[in-house]
Image (cartoon, rainbow, N blue to C red; front, side):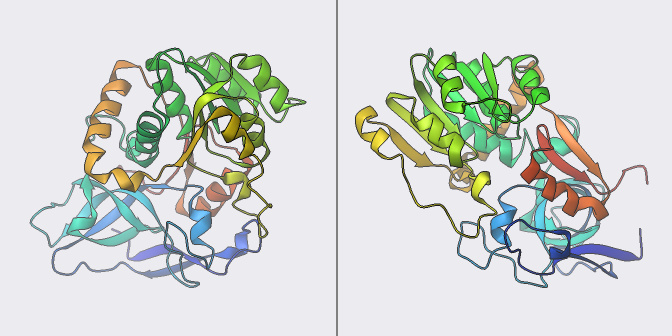
Length: 339
């Protein structure tokens, strides 16, 4: 075990898009676990768009970090020292821990990860928070029916890619919106989406959606907000359901655009808009975990991961989310189990 522990702190609050100087890496001694605590060595760490909100000094569904505070993320790691009867050295666990090589966690902060079910990194993606968000957001909030047209923005991301595949499994026609030809090909090829739109190369997203959805959009799963969502609102079908999951196009805006501008569409279409926050479903996590694991094992749901190696590169991996460089789930591999 290393004698030092690298960890990332929030160095300052961003002004608009975060920059490298918003992050500071420091080295400390590896912490000792107290009573009913364990020491976890990080194997994989998640970076997610919602973390941008935690860099603000503003109320949100995720508590903001203080300047100088260690940043936190979903982590899959290995217990290396335990003062808890619930965990033994060698156990693989998942929890919300520090951006660090090692972290101390209370025994109740952790859940087990089964290395025989799937690669352990999937506990941060398709079999973790993003997968559960897709599952509950689509099935409980979107309520798709066979024959519905489902449109997913951010469709090649960790959440959107799972949403589209569950919708296909439910008998829907699925249209994805993404920002690169490679992503479009992945969606319509491996994942089986019926159509996909590259919004960066399309002259009019609104026009492309009109062609792709001639009977309107029954379920719009919104991961991005902004102009793409404006375009989708123009094509909502009667009794459409809009699932608001993310607004990444606005996360770096210091002045939010005036709005909402498109609510008039909800009157004529009698549509419903509802946000989804996965922690509301904590009592049903096992349901989602079991079904997602079954679908992954059967090939109904496929996944990809974009893996950045090295804790020192975690800020780059996070910042890349705002350029859409990742396909599927973006994770950081912090350590190798062989080392």
